[in-house]
Length: 391
Image 1 (cartoon, rainbow, N blue to C red):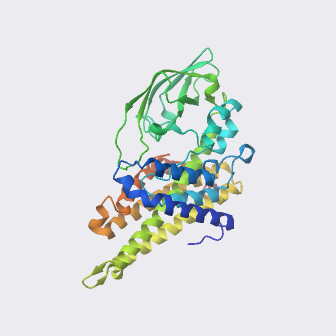
Image 2 (tube, rainbow, N blue to C red):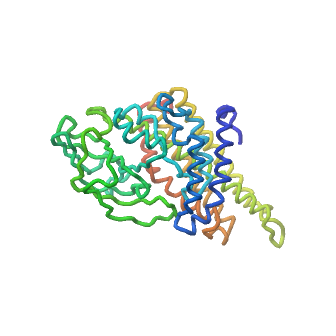
Image 3 (tube, helix red, strand yellow):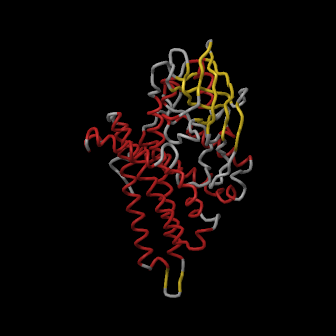
């Protein structure tokens, strides 16, 4: 499916490069990762990491003034769409920095945390979600008491993705005291900080090398210099972060759906029954037709949203469109994964089958970075305020 309105030669070049990377260095190791708790041999991981660095993937969203590639959103969507074709989290083979970091971090923070991240020397995990509020970030209970130039962090964070592989965390907490009393703020926290403990490391449906531990914060002292942003900025950068994360999740969902359609099409074409090929059954043709139509619609939403960001659409519209992209694409790929398992039959229930792995893995796309219900609320509020023109 070529969306020529959005995909120029540069975007297509990145598509080809990342597809080749995925096909050569990632997809061939999916089953090995699946059967070994997501862990691959060190030489394989080093090779994957080296290729990612050579391509400059850690720098894709960073500004050119700091050595970044400053790729447009359409190009980044094309990159993550191709990575979406890969299971077992194997595309998480590089660290990544974001444009908002360079706009909101101090020179010292850039030198200490962000530039090493961009050079793939360190890794970061985000500690935001809590047991109670879940996707409702406004309900966060973790506190950061300000006293004498330091913040004292207390609370608990769930689902800290990639924490077992990270050097530091970005933590959200409610400020108590000082000029920012009552505000939410983000902080850099070293993974070996005193008072930071792993309270639980629950197993999940997927088999990733990256874990999602629960962290406890007990009087974790953080210097004021490690707070991200300034008092009174209301963390406006978080909206930029959420927009990008939601859009790239949507892109990965499109890649996953494409791989699933390819897999079930090939299986149905070669599967011989007593009265002909599985692909000759109308129900199979209809299922594949519906999945292909779903994918085409999702890709149009995703690439049009990326185009609107690249061309400077109103930020409120961007925010709602990213929610629409994540909502539609994540629910689309779950339908596709379900029908793929059905077409594969018993084979579709085997962990060595990509359909089974996707069936487990894409389910979280309707949950993290804001559930489908949160996305619907964001969209509905925009329509309520400005009508359909608000989108």
